[in-house]
Image 1: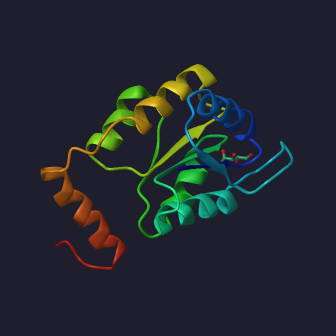
Image 2: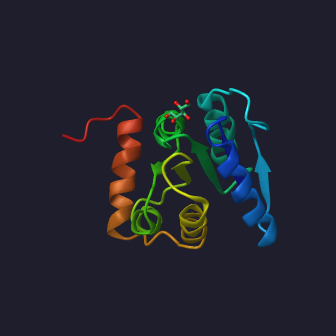
Image 3: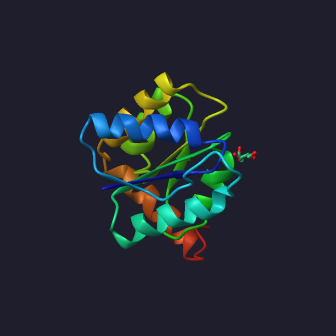
Length: 149
Ligand code: RB5
């Protein structure tokens, strides 16, 4: 199960991504917003990320105007590793190396064609583990207030 959400600026792209998920029989839950009316991105970021942390969803896709604000909000949720991506390589490697559980994109930055390619590679790439797990553990340690140095 995938959580999807965003703000008013991300709404049109969110609808395109929903259509893609429907067409590919990928189950999702849409945490909003549900119209192009003004809606603050931190709310949908927290809603979607809470579903990932609880285990209700495996991953989340979040969209705002730039992808930046919503990724900042997402990364404040403990256990979330959100990546704001505009290119295929980053979307792929944030899974391979960073075990990212949230993909953020900017509807004012990329078009639907690119966004759907990022969604596809993000959802279909497994974490490599190994030496990268050590680094994920270090990120978690920072999150837990531990010093790495
Ligand atoms: C909304 O106008 C815009 O600020 C928001 O979608 C996002 O781009 C923030 O990072």
